[in-house]
Length: 613
Image 1: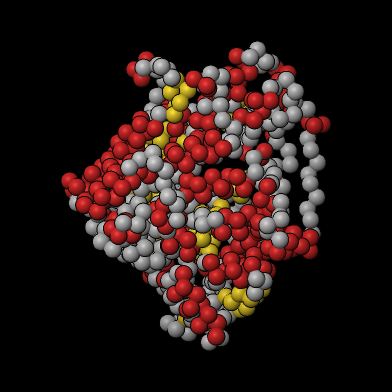
Image 2: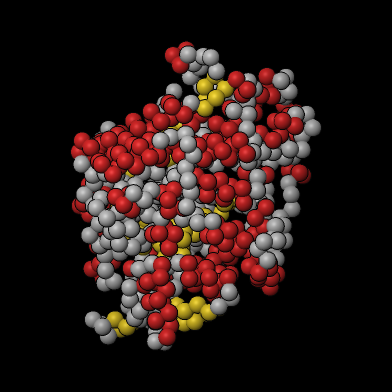
């Protein structure tokens, strides 16, 4: 069975004439002009044609009502422009009918069109004010979070009248922002919490915008010597520098973690190709040496892809050959815990989570430095944090374990440099994990039973590990299956299921989101890009979301939230049991109640139970 796999674009394109093997592209708006906007649009179309997913920043596009010197008129703002991008994403699908085009649009919350931006994906409202086929993301500076926290005012600017806010971060951004406030350049001043309120409303209704923290992304980046990073990608795990002359690119691969669970005393050559279930977990172990070996192979593999790749636009080729970023991720972390008999949120699982990512980061750096010894460091290596001996754990203030010889690695890097500016970027793995038969990336199982729709029809799928364990124990039956369906994929309220299995087979809805954020932080100090962190809330409200966003920000995560996942009031699969068992749709709280929940979370976060949701 495969020990790792390259990503979706690779599988789509490696056999065709123009083998574009990269998955992720980050585009910077070329200029705030008709020429710049349509040049950017053309680039997005060409990339989408070659099966690339796109993240594009629009911070520098002037706001509604801003003066246009060339025509003596005023701007219509970003909404009409994004509707054009929306139609392009619909028209230019990936690879010619293989997959829909996918663009994520990034905006900083100081932009004067922010309120209209938050409405673009909503299900109601005037159609001319909507662009529902795009995905939306916020690039959030620390200053905004501080103003929300203190219930302060927040000024909205037009980038044409208050330039360069998108081109700086940290203290420099704060000084410039306050300078523009004092000069009276704001187009509008609002309460920061009112804008926050609208962000949460959009997230609860649509699952977006994504939340990424601008200052943290720049502060903890090995590309900070290049300039200010202005956006992430479609899936929020790629954090790379872009400019009008450089379109960031990343080549991805994911390591299939369950393949590294071994049985004690069984030689590697006679080991079963694939283990299933938690039964017998006491005789299993995780093979870190094999993981280390394969990580180095993956690093070399992705470097070869950089060299042989076909680049759809010249700006992408220029960026990738200069900085040589790669993105190594994982799939099947939940399967790995199950095979070892660990509950997802157990101390043992949390430690294994850290050890796995420390191993991958260490050996990716080691392989990259070995390549640099032969081929030289990447072109823009001089001045980057790694060139100064600053690795990702140093940026988090974390001391690695004694599992690997970090002193020897630092000496090696000081001598050779590294071949790649960036190395780790745990991605969603939605397609490749299905091909390899693993659960997605680092997420818990969302359900122990679900329906899967393919071209040949729709069928029910049961968690293979749970099915194996219950069958081995003589407990599997149609009654058990129907009980699991009735319980929305949970086994917690089924008396026939033993207690030890209930702990192992808890779904993401039964695990505290605070614990999942903590585990993201634990591995984050070994991730030099970011991670596609979904948030799952059964019934999200303003209190829960506010508490969780501020917790993620305070813990130093780069991606605070990819999608907000909430459960439907009725699950289609339950209609196969008894429609009378469907739950009533919960009542929606009014705006005053939601605001009260939010303020409570902001003022009493230590006592707030929201992060225990």
